[in-house]
Image 1 (cartoon, rainbow, N blue to C red):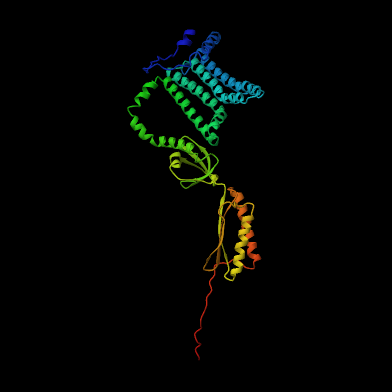
Image 2: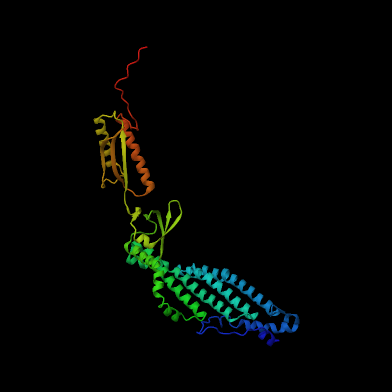
Length: 402
């Protein structure tokens, strides 16, 4: 019976790879498939119908494989909620928060490991674990390992932020995010190479062979390289930061993220706009967040019935009001002048700056300035003009006598 169960329907495995494959699966299950197979022997003796085949697999092994898979799924849930939960509660008692973050980061990868082991035992017990399936399972294991490493690297974001702040406090957040992305990229590259080794692909030879098509690859990736160097230029020039309000290449909004290839800007219509870094690095950037003041520029028109004395007094009172206003940047340019004789108004030009760049606060200041100007005009017994025309008739034609 053991011979039947161990050798039935076992395919001949042909190694089609010429290089040595990376095998991390063997020994991971601690030979549980062999132990389960030995436990099945008495059941085959007591219940002969278990020896019947279904899709080429003895029913006893099929039932055992399903039960083992269900067992590992239950074990995964138990591990996630009981073991990980207990470790998280213990970590909250420590002074550092990194242990709690590491446990949380490893929760999903460690849970996925139970699924991989369950799949391995499932295919081993139904005698379907061919070389291809082994390679797939080995690939999943490598993926899971590097998934765990990348997840743990996120935990040290604060360390990168603290370290980069020593060199450049203004751009510490952007630099730490950029460094973390580069580290993740290299970890992912090593993981991808390890997954290729699982399938017998010689990564070293593959990289060397890329030298033959290096020129074509460089031409194809020139835009990516330009964007990468553009991101370096943005960080080095300190031209933009996350959270700043900018306008570049016709796009206006708040910077949400500066990546290795693109920068994401959230427009004021709440749409997310993604711009390549090379465009931002080579295009004039208008950074509204970097200004400490905001301009107030206007022209008011008085009626032509206003006398010169009234205009002079209104101009002086507006100047005094602006100079004494607590929210006007008096150290900046401040101009109030009787500018011109308009078609339907006597125009006064007003040019000054608010003491804040905040848009909401700026609107409040501008509104207050408008109201005070209206009060000054009213107190000087004149009014604002509106577009109008006066028609003068020199003479009327003589009436025809009947």
